[in-house]
Length: 265
Ligand code: PEP
Ligand code: MN
Image 1 (cartoon, rainbow, N blue to C red):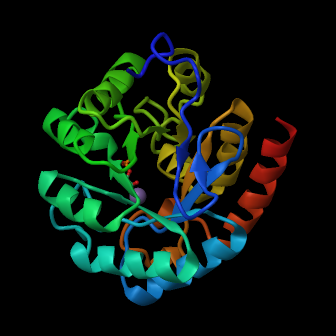
Image 2 (tube, rainbow, N blue to C red):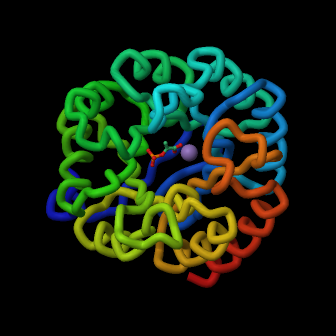
């Protein structure tokens, strides 16, 4: 089902009531904090990313943290805050379901269900997301081959949900100058084999704020259908991923530069 042998035409995912789409000609941009921390924080970031031209707002309600003692997310309270943000700014909401229990709530509130890198091969979660009727943003596992990535998407589609957005978010290598190595070559590789849209996450893909704009430009130039970027108004105080979160002013610059590159393609 993921293959161009079955369907050659590019999949375009549309959002009724908006002119936002993922796939096709327009660049889709998803931006927001790693985690929803407070109502004030979420609204402060949402206002600025909306003003800069993002069509989608991201924010974690359920966080897959390396340490069990680290901030785990506000859960349903965060989902409610994001629903208010949709109403106020018209942004479509993207948030992660870390397990089948969170999936039910995420499905009630969000516009796009995110499956994280650590869950890319959680087959029961993939099947459960495949039974939902909302688009799924599937992040590539940090050690997944292209075939494993596409087969994970196949699990979702095999349950009848054909609205899958692939996301490259960096893979593990020996490099120490970045947290992960953003594999931009996977974008044209996916596009040759599959009709599904693919977006790039330069935030997790580098782990470093000062590399996010450059890799965003590169992702657009290589042909990505969109970007997912972490933005925080006070990254030094962020409860997760502050080091890779860009300032709102940097996001405005990113939108300008990425937009110019998208236009010449
Ligand atoms: C995230 O988007 O905040 C996240 C946890 O991403 P990943 O699953 O790619 O690590
Ligand atoms: Mn994050």
